[in-house]
Image (cartoon, rainbow, N blue to C red):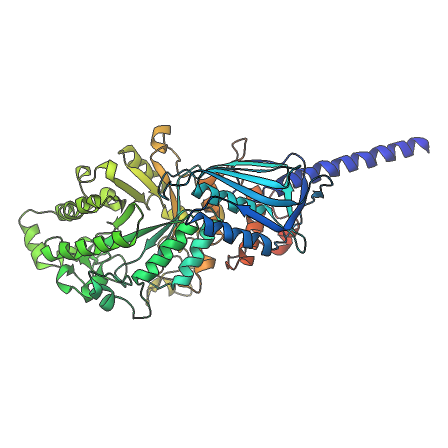
Length: 582
């Protein structure tokens, strides 16, 4: 009897100790629900304190940081986030309520541009009523404010962990989203909401693919006819005032707005105002009975600027000059992708040029040599899509693209093309369609695509995929290593990455669900990586945190798509392929 009691007591003690260990483990990670995961976060004792209802944030005045401070204070006091799985945290008996957060910034003058320091350190002491946030720049301070805001939770009384120390800095300096506003139009409010969500995910570049063959929605003072005639209508335009609003909103959220005016291809919409400078405009994209190689465009919507027409460059000079004036961003994206030989060959002047032993690549070199130096003269670094150097048929000699003024954005062939770019000495932005294209997997948009009409006995109902299908899951995005196969020196030339939402089959009704939380997956991998301290991929652990982060984004008004049934979230680990405690 006594022996049984002793054994029973020992078992109970063991179970209690085991529970406490597991609980402590869960608690220690609960302070790390911050997304993206910080580089280092220490919380040795799982204690929390009350956040004072009179909580204040003090910081030096700055035209962009000060609005951010006011915004975050209001958010912190009113959000009242309730985690889906409440953290087993003890309320400290010795810690006073947290009354204030003090921000110290070493360099208030550093502009928001590539390579700006975004590091910060956050300390929430257990024995003080004041937390401290220090950063090299205001942009790092904004990242730290976001982290602090995510650590606060509670219903009526707000709680914040104490004894927390964070040091944080991004692995990659360029972390962005491409949004195409030409195929379908997005109102300014949708763009602002996207930038706000980007800031919450510590993404810092809104790559705005403003124009394309389908529409020209940007109003430019020097070339008003382009938008007047090339947009979808007067209610689908971006005025200079709209651009100023978006740029200012971006600055107040630590997000650069990088404009892209794609040329010489993807310019059919320019023909509405200037038909003389655009070849093959408004022609059917793939003539009947022709081979794919003889197409006029890679999708419906034809038109390419004519490099042989002097008027082309006068219009371009005005467009580029106005765009640079509207966007203070030091990078300018000039496109340069998908030049289709058939479109240029449809023009009589180009036919004559080719008949005299001229080449299509020489045409592109003439175009680049007439535009690239002008962009550089405006104190801009030129970003091109990879095609301008890597296309199999139409490309320029590298001598036309000095690496000190050129960045190449890769979208084909995964890590292979990244390797080709950086091994040639160019800086790279990675947007590999195999991993980072968010529009893929929703079928094609052609009206009479025969792949959907197989014989009923064939057993093949069509794969329903787009050209870049299948759908890119958050796991596909999270597990992509953008520097795979590169040497340490080559890796230094990879600036970062961008997920892309092209809008053939997207518009404001699906904007949030197409982007979030999949863009959040990239955000973490580019900020702190996708591996744990042992070097193993952490996607299983990441799912629990991403579920929680998605829940929080939805409560912020971002209609991010769900990743799992709610049951999985409320039963952590039970929906894994391997139980974490097995």
